[in-house]
Amino acid sequence: MDRAQLADFLRTRREALRPEDVGLPRGPRRRTRGLRREEIAALCGMSTDYYARIEQQRGPMPSEPMLAALARGLHLSLDERDHLFRMAGHNTPSRTLRTDHVSPGMMRILDRLTDTPAQVISTLAETLVQTRLAVALVGNETGYTGLDRSLAYRWFTHPHARRIYPEADHATHSRIFTSELRNAYSRQGTDSRAGQIVNALLEKSGEFATLWSAHEIGVRREGDLKRIQHPDLGILELHCQVLFDADQAQALLVYTATPGTDSHDKLQLLSVVGDRPSQR
Image (cartoon, rainbow, N blue to C red; front, top):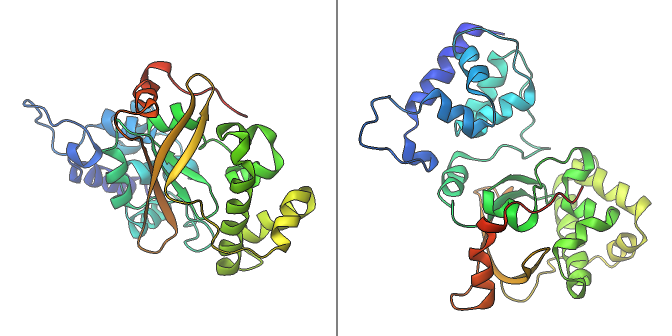
């Protein structure tokens, strides 16, 4: 671990970010070059004291999850993220088998969607980051570990995962998840994480095994309308706009409702009802 270089790198990256890059107001009296330490700490989900100690060349070696959080909060490129891991004494994350790192451009867009449910997902239906209103709409989907990180895996193995959609839509979602997994499987190969999920589901879910044997590719719902079942607000009919990154490894989902509809009114209430209860 190179404490001096790590501290200097974090400081320069922090000072290079502008408040508007991460959706924060600049304010008329801001004198700090770039972002303040407490602002970066909040973006990374860590205490200001913990972050400050790293910049001051103190404290323990940061763990890999902490480094990943720093990379996201600082909007680092993949090369910068790998450099961060090496300076902290860790091996660099794989760029091919896992797609956990959200690109700076995608993060800048997400940071501006403060009044909209939005989240970034991988090709394996793993939620990487969510806005506050997305958590209120579908629950916190970023805290799962192992194969459970994939909503496609949870869909076929944990009944509670289906509560976010009306029962009448379950069959369609099952076909879509299976089709998307097959697409990832064909791209990544049998020894990939997609292969691990598929093999596990073939053993655990008869429904998945039946759908997998049908070899359906490119299954999609008609239009962009998606129905979400909320425990307090009932069913919301939302338009789900999808923005893919350059290599199609991640997608930004943005949920909106047609103005003047009941679903639009319910969407405005998300910030009032608060976070959706955990489905774990």
